[in-house]
Amino acid sequence: MSIPSGSPPGSEPAEIPGIEPDAASTPAAASWIGVFLSTATTVFLAELGDKTQLAALLLSAESGRPGVVFVGASLALICSSLVGVLLGRWLSTVMSPRQLERSAGVLMVALGLWLGRQAVLHLAPLPAA
Image (cartoon, rainbow, N blue to C red; front, side, top):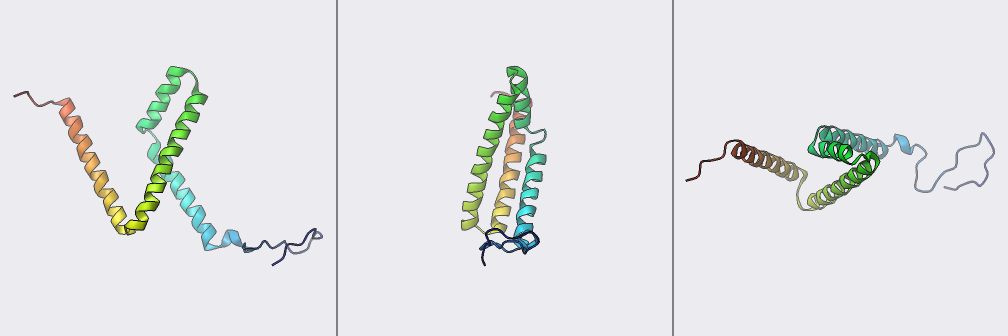
């Protein structure tokens, strides 16, 4: 594999060491695009109407500086996503994907039940003894 230095027009494209000519059509490239689109879509839809978005809406309205709020909220989302990615990568080394999925499901159900209990107790507090 060599990189010609100044190929005449109409000649073969330059080959780059370690990169296949049809890299965009390889399963690795398709896999990368699939993971990227799936992640972007999932996070976007999960964040719509989320309390984070509502907080950004309120902060923007109160401060009158939507650009600063956007940058701050974006950095916060990037940092929290980084924590999730790093934790997920580490957990994938100590748990099988099936165990990880089940653990995440149990955690989500437990959090939902706990938050539901907190809401019920807040709306209808138990009488003092």
